[in-house]
Image 1 (cartoon, rainbow, N blue to C red):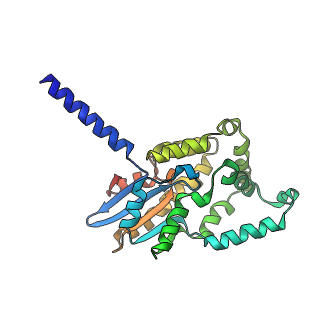
Image 2 (image 1 turned 180 degrees about the horizontal axis):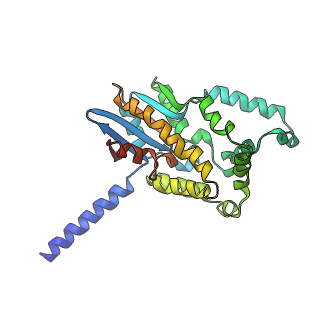
Image 3 (image 1 turned 60 degrees about the vertical axis):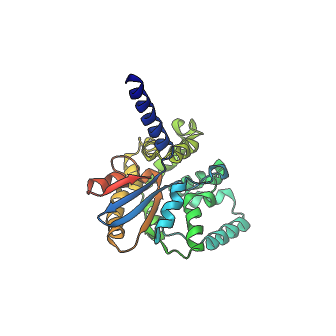
Length: 260
């Protein structure tokens, strides 16, 4: 009998390990007969990060519409702007005219860290949506997204730039890899923790970039869920995890949320 119990325990443990290994930052949200999918994104990845976990394609295929964090500019327009600024060869001294928050974004450019936004989860799904003539929109308009930064005070903008030079930041050359590894195993809570840790000395920035936006998005997500269409809502993985993340906020409102 003891041997039977041991076999049951071992089998259950193996099933748990297999299920955990197969988890992705994708969730299925249900309200009665209505269904919505959530996808935690990494905005920039390496080619070695592909293929994406299969749950992303399953959620995409099961959805009628895709909603991204930001209403994206057509990649052709973005590419045109990038080439124009490259041809202009603006001297580095000209950057003195830009506000600190903008300089911090320049310093965080994925290309400087061996990553590419063209390999990010959003770009992959945008291409699939375009190929399948699937409508796509954003939780935020381009203007609303810009306002997240334009509305920063000078002190907040300077703090955002300062974060790039803090010892804790410099000592974490592998932070991007750590975030990608957590995302790959479906651990959005760790991604949120890493992001919050980055902002631990500047809690007002964490509120502005993560918590406030999560709360603002919930009514929109609920409207998607109550519609007759099935939506796949894709936003940064750090928006999904933690006690103030989208997953927790939806569960607190009584929705059934199941990780795929």
